[in-house]
Length: 292
Image 1 (tube, one colour):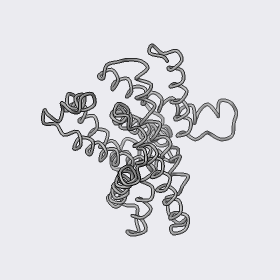
Image 2 (cartoon, rainbow, N blue to C red):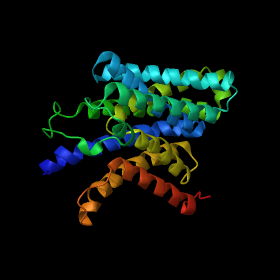
Image 3 (cartoon, one colour):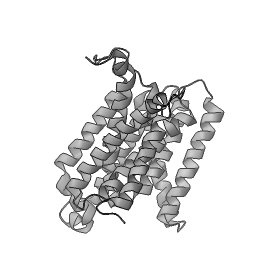
Image 4 (cartoon, helix red, strand yellow):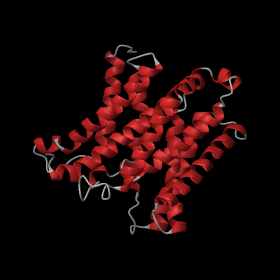
C-alpha cells in the first residue's frame, strides 16, 4: 500500500515532472532536427507577458483565458521574429534572442507594476515553477486530482498520438521537406501545428514546471539521444526515456538527498532536474557511443 503522504505530496509532483518531460522531449525532437531549438526558448519566454496581460484583462487565472493570452503572445512573438528577419535583416538566432528578452522583460514589468503580489503569479514561479507545492488532497480520487495534471496529461496523450499516427509524415518533413511538399504534406501547416502544441504544453507547464525546466526538457533529451543513436525511431524513444528518468531522479535528488545529508531544506526540484539533464548531456558528449 502506497504511503498517503507520498501520494498526496510527492506523487503529483512526480506526475507533473514525468508528463512535462514526455511532452517536451517528444516535441523537442522536431525543433532539434529542424535546428529551431532557439525558437522554443523564444516561445517559452514569450508566453509570460501573454499570461500577465490575460490576467489583467480577465481578472482570473482560468485555463481558457490563460491559453488565449499565451497564444496571442506567441503569435506576436513569431510575427516580431519574422519582421526582424525580413525588414530588419537580423539573423534568425539574433531575432529570437531579441524577442525573448523583450517579451520576458515586458512580462516582468507588467507583473511587478500592475499585478503585484495578490495573485499566484510571479517571476520566481515563471522561472523555476513550483513542483514541490503540488498537492493531491484525496489520493486515488479523480475529482481531487490537480487540474494541471489532468490538462498536461491530455496534452501528453495528444503528443503521443501525433507521433504514433503521423510518424512517416514527421520523418519526411524533418529530413526532406521539399519532397514532403511535392507529396502533399505542407511543412508550414505541420510546423504551425507543432507550435500550437508547444504553446499548449508551455501553458500547461508554466505554473508548476517553469521556463528553465521546460527549456531543459525541450533540448537536453533530444540532444542526449542524439549521442546514443542515429535512427529517428530510437531517437524519439531514447529522448522520452531520458526525459522521464531524469525527471524522477532529479526530483528524488532535490527532495531526498538534502535530508539524507542532514540539511534543513530541500533543493529546487526544477533546478536539480535541469542540472541532471545538463550533466547527462556532458557525460554522453564525452563518453557516449556517438561522442564528440
